[in-house]
Amino acid sequence: MLETWQHLFAAVPDGWTRAEPGALAAVSGVALPTLNGVYVASLDADAEMVADLLDQVAATGLPHCLLVRPDAAKRVTDLAVVRGMTREQVPLMVMENSSQLGAVQATDGLVIRELVPAEAHLHAQVAAAGFEAPVELFLQLSTPALLELQGVCCYLGEVDGQPVTTGVGVTLGSYVGIFNIATQPAHRRHGYGAAVTARAVTDGLTAGAKWAWLQSSELGYRVYESLGFRTAEVWSCWLSATATDP
Image (tube, rainbow, N blue to C red; front, side, top):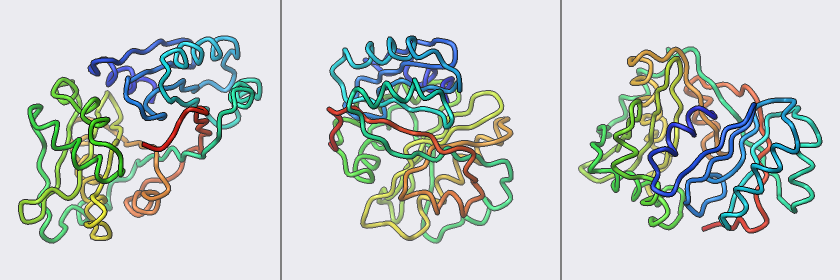
């Protein structure tokens, strides 16, 4: 996860990262809390170091998060409590058996294609509708430079020529990370999100990955589970007091 954020944010206009042992501060510049924050992967990460990274992120004035691996030292999670941050639970899911993916992609009427960098705005438009967020925020993140990064594949699913679903796969070495799976509200419950997820995973495995991972929302959890993803860990995601829904 930390490696992927570093890779992606290098291509975001206002993005930056700061890496320390077992933790990463990453800022996208986009006013969504989960796209700016400190990600703590080590169970014994130094609390002072994490606090310093969190201060650097908070200084941007952007809504942000502290994402912490389960069973991390209590003194790390205490940092969130004293700052008035609120907690959500985020499943980290992995897939090592891709046997269920083939049939899912054959969804009636759905045509999935990979976007070229100049079409990055199409992903932003569908993702914004799917997440019910301002499109301007997704346009900040979804840029041609992002789609030009090595290992990044962005997909658009269409029915009768109309965009209905989208998603991103990022293949780095032995794994493919899945991001921004979104289906427009009027087109949900047709299997489109599952199909675009399966395509992203399949392409990643074809490119050399051995397994896939993603962070699931409550809405997508059962979909990912049906594809063969399993919960490896449930992380605590602490949101800043200034974090509000867009």
